Amino acid sequence: MPEKKERIVRFTPNDLEEMRSRGEVGSDWKRAARQGLPDGNDPDDALNAVSPDWVMTEVPLPRTKTHASIRIDADVLEWFKSRGRGYQTRINAVLRQYYEHHREP
Image 1: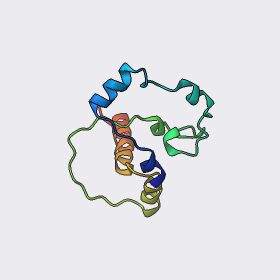
Image 2: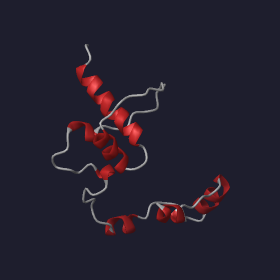
Image 3: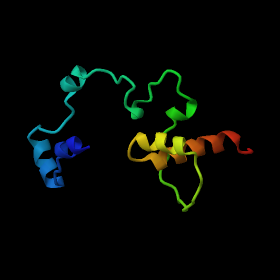
Image 4: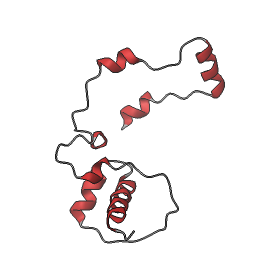
């Protein structure tokens, strides 16, 4: 992750307005076109051909959360953690998808 921190650039709203007036702000579509399509190695790509439905689930908007202590199989937890930051949010998204599918109407 240190690589990403080195690429982070911050601008103030005034900086952005000045850049916009000079025509320096915008999408670099030529650069984007040169980049290849995701190969599925990044878990956020969700391109795995045999992925379950919940993989395509959008991370929900923040809701009121409550603290809970649950027991999860070690291999399941490690798998979610290996996907990087936000693993608890992804676990919640999977549980929400299951809940939405099985709840009584």
